Length: 210
Image 1 (cartoon, one colour):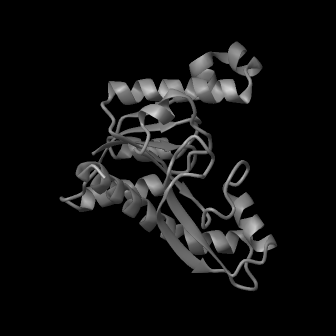
Image 2 (tube, rainbow, N blue to C red; image 1 turned 45 degrees about the vertical axis):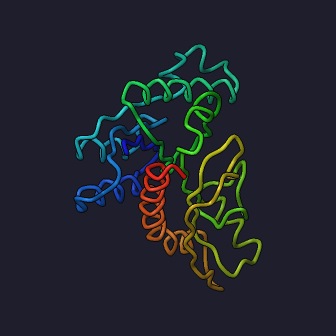
């Protein structure tokens, strides 16, 4: 299964996917493309080191400086999503993996890749999902709510925000003295496991036609 991995930052989950593919001859996926919506994402360096084609599709690169500065948030999202869809067509991408991608896809790409886009979310959906729930915002909300456990979720992407079918979840306890940082550090290794499991499960689902 040829996949495109979408990133925005450090790319630790991308690295987990790269390492798994490299270390397993029976790996059911091939990372054929990495796309970042930020030019300074370290994930781009990880892709370069692994010999994976990488592209930047930001509001400025897609719309140009003048249009990007005046465009609404939704206009930027659709423009980037359409540009990524074009890249997926060019590279014959079969599935899309959002690995720390801090934007929301919209428009044609959601329809065309329905059932073939997965996202990693740093909480136990359906709790603590939706607009604004990303990164440390999620961990702060979990602690503020007094939750006894948290974790991460890999789910299919639909037209909503963190609302698609859940494929994989990993749980960790929330400790009384936790901070957003310490909770993140406990969840992070499980994110890598969940990401790999989620991509492999998607490959299995698509192969079997379920």
